[in-house]
Image (cartoon, rainbow, N blue to C red; front, side, top):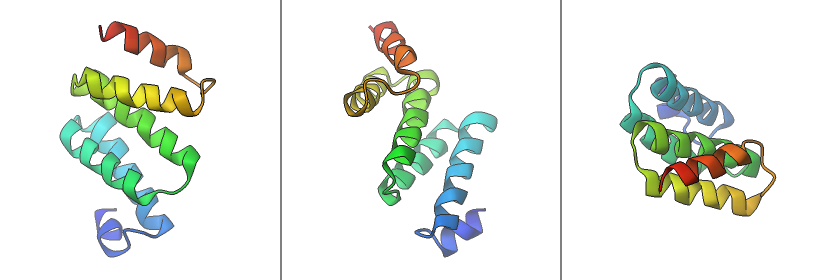
Length: 101
C-alpha cells in the first residue's frame, strides 16, 4: 500500500491506501506517532467533508486514548461538534471532553 501512496499520493487510490495505512498503524500496530502523521497528511489531501470528519474523529481518538494529548483531542472534538452538533458519537465526544479535565 505504501508504494501506491508514494506513486500516486493525490489519487483516490492513493488516499484510500493512506487511510488504510493510518488505521492499521493506529488500531493494529500501536504506532501512534506514525498514525498521527498519516492522518494529518491525509487531512491535507482530502476535500470530502464527510471523510475529513471521519479522519478527524480517528485523530481525536488517537490523541485522546493513545497519545494522551488531551488539549488537542478537545480542540478536534469541538471543531467536529461545531460543524455538526448532531454528528454520530457526539455524546462520546462530550464525555471525552469532560474526562479530559
